[in-house]
Every structure is written in structure tokens, then in C-alpha cells.
Figure 1 (cartoon, rainbow, N blue to C red):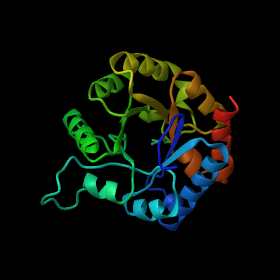
Figure 2 (cartoon, rainbow, N blue to C red):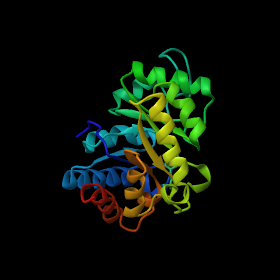
Figure 3 (cartoon, protein in one colour):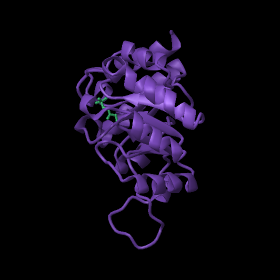
Figure 4 (tube, rainbow, N blue to C red):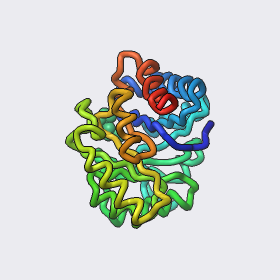
Amino acid sequence: MTKVHTPLILVNFKTYSEATGKKAVKLAQTAEKVSLETEVCIGVAPQFVDIAPICHAVSVPVFAQHIDPIAPVSFTGHILPESIREAGAVGTLINHSERQLTLADIDATIKRARETDLLSVVCANNTSISAAAAVLKPNMIAVEPPELIGTRIPVSKAKPEVVSGTVEIVKRINPDVVILCGAGITTREDVAAALRLGTEGVLVASGIVKAKDPYKVLLEFAESITKA
Ligand code: G3P
């Protein structure tokens, strides 16, 4: 099921050791197992070098954590969108708070993603950045207040107004954009709250990657969608 559908649970593997190399493949297999059992779309965003092995091992949608808005010419040490697509990814995060870009670069990166058939998921740290991003016509926007990232304090409960405000303004600007929220998402209630606020999924990292039993937590997340 490499096709992306909503509600979406997108797991960012970041550069956590628990989600690197062979462990990244194993975590992606866990995501696939839960996805097959619940029919909830679960995507993964591993580190670049883990994209191809994961795409060979599983059929869940794989996203890069970043791409550079470059053409296939003479650059060194950059991430070419075409190479990400060829490795099997279906999309990419853009402007994650741990990999921020200028507005001009976000615009150029969304365009390159579109040209290379990659879904663009622009991360935004608040409602106004979400609104600015919506004008650039990405496929998805993930609103994530940076101060809540990794805290286990869920944005959907600590800052519901940021989530609902983002949904309202982004849908007014561009109703086609899928809205996710992230930061501190740790329990099934956090996921349910995110959907109640009008989002179509969550972007999550430590709540899954650092969980003692990622299968159990992912299953709870997925069931909060199927048993809502
Ligand atoms: O990309 C998702 C991320 O920034 C949220 O992190 O650990 O709070 O789920 P976390």
C-alpha cells in the first residue's frame, strides 16, 4: 500500500539510533504490520540512506526528511529529488523545524517535488507560517510548534488553537491541502484530539520511535482512527 490516503499517521524516524539502519527497516515493518491489520495509512520518514532498503522491504509509503531544490547537474553533498524518487519514496518533508528553509527555498522545493512526482509535506511552526505555506500549494502541511517537539506534551491538547486556527486559515486559502499536526503526540487520545480539531492525520516521532513497544503504540494510534 504505497498509495497515501487519509487519515495518515506519518512517523518521522529523525536521526534516532532506534530508527537507523537495520532498526529502521524493522520499525518500517512494524508500521506495515499495523497498517495491514487496521487499514490505516502509516507512512515513514527515515534517513536518506535507509530509504531504498525500506522501500525494498515494505510497501508502506516512504517519505524523505528533506530534499534540495536542485537539478541533476553538478552539485556535491546535496539531496537530488530524482534520487529520492528512484529510491522508492513517494514524498518528502520540507522545512522541518530541525531543517528549516527560507520561504523562497520552500517554494522552489515544493516545485521540484511536484516535478519529480513526490508529495510535499511542508512543516510549519505556527498558524501564519502554515498560511504562507498554503499559498505555495504543497500537498500537505504539518503544523508543529517547535517548543512541544519531543516533550510528550501533545500539540492537540496543549495548543488546540494553533491546530484549529491552522485548519481554518489553510482550508480558506487552499482547500486541497491535507493538514497534519505534530509535536508531543504520544497517546491514542492525542491522535483522536488531532482529528477532532479538523486535521487529517499526525506527524509523530519520539512517541513511536522511543516507545518501549512501537507496535503496541502504533496499533493504539491506528485504532483511535478506526474505532472513533
Ligand atoms: O516530525 C515530527 C516531530 O517533529 C514531532 O516530534 O518527538 O514530538 O513526536 P515528537
